[in-house]
Image 1 (cartoon, protein in one colour):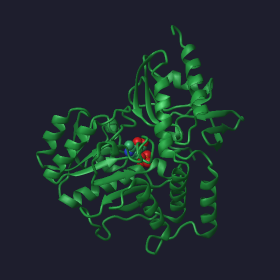
Image 2: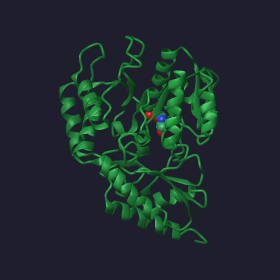
Image 3: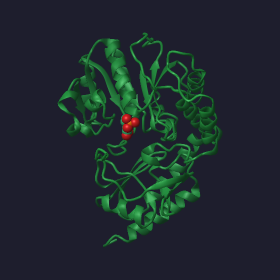
Length: 382
Ligand SMILES: Cc1ncc(COP(=O)(O)O)c(C=O)c1O
């Protein structure tokens, strides 16, 4: 049977990972500044992560959501402690798209509306409502996906965003505080405050998609924190499981109280996923990884801006975008094949996305910068 052809693949076969490195089947070691697309938060094969999952597997790996599962409560309690958000309910699912799908559904149940406001260059996933609000994926919307009525506003045009919200026609606005796929633009904290106020006035649900920028990646536990607002719904995934498929929806419990059977899932919150999620939170706490992301992010950014052929450095923490003076597609390949460094891309063809594990060290940053410098030098006319 052939695999359904989805991606253009790099010719690398990782067989092992450790910390910030992956090793391929030929024994080549790569520095991972891509984190498997912002997923690897606590590093590859962290001993506590392995041990927690292993010992859970030996007990029970799955049972349905019709019985008690104390691990879900442990995960929720630890998440509340680390994020400082105790007045939210947690609904556990398996991916980022599912998180956004459920968030939009909850919003629509809440105010009985169906129009959604999203922002240009957004990415929220590939399932039906999620792809609908994904500006960067409009060409991938099949006719069956055109269910929701979506308006897109430019990311920085706060007046047009507020005008739309103030019509009172929208069920929700969905925002990435730092855009991932779209190219690392950050929402202005003052804009987010104005959006919060307009949402309050019109009973519009404010959804913050923290699937990529959350879980410490921005240098805060959640990227919206610097705006001093509280969303109605927060969606999470990626770094939450360090590679184990898990996602979550945090729901303002007072505003949107739970209604039985509205949401549901077979696999969401299963024992093994919870074990992975708990181990990640333990490690983030124990190793102070949110502070490390903030500190290493500054260190890295300060040096990236000094590199030749750099147009801008966007983002913060360990979610950075290096905008170069040329398209990065070949450069990214060269980084992998010649310098053994993994990085990511974005919709901006000139932007290299930098998403190392939150546990990255100063030494690994130096190695990354050395490779980057050498690779830049190898470009003609540099
Ligand atoms: C901000 C954001 N939201 C949602 C998603 C979708 O997540 P998933 O691929 O787990 O469905 C992504 C994936 O890249 C993302 O970056």
